[in-house]
Image 1: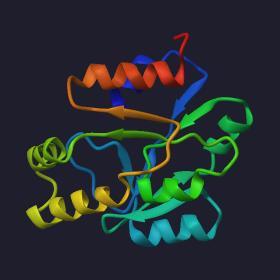
Image 2: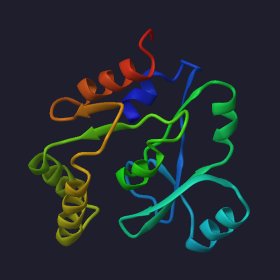
Image 3: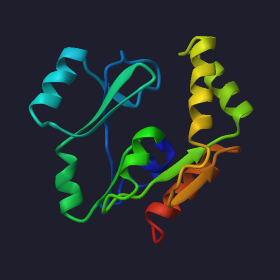
Length: 160
């Protein structure tokens, strides 16, 4: 997603939402860290357009992105497959599944070094539950990052 965001940076019709996550930042973070208490306050005050829990953390998308949707822009959210299941019948929502084969994903997660071996195993098991997720577009990320990025860019902005 980062590759696509960089290549669509000057394309105003597509906006990449920043996630708020109850996890500390780490190298290459693509989220804004919030404490569980901050997250609860954001949720209670209606400041989150979407929210979900995954991998022991809470994730949220700021309500300000609703203005982009209302203005006709495409807002891209790096979300959860489990959360996406409930969104499939929602108007104006399209689900793009970016996936990799189990062995490749396991190797990538291990190289990332953020998750303990049992957490990697749990993530892989969780992915298996969504093997047949209905989507509008699927990208199999098995090669170069640029290949998967180009596929996402083409889906989001065919003329860009």
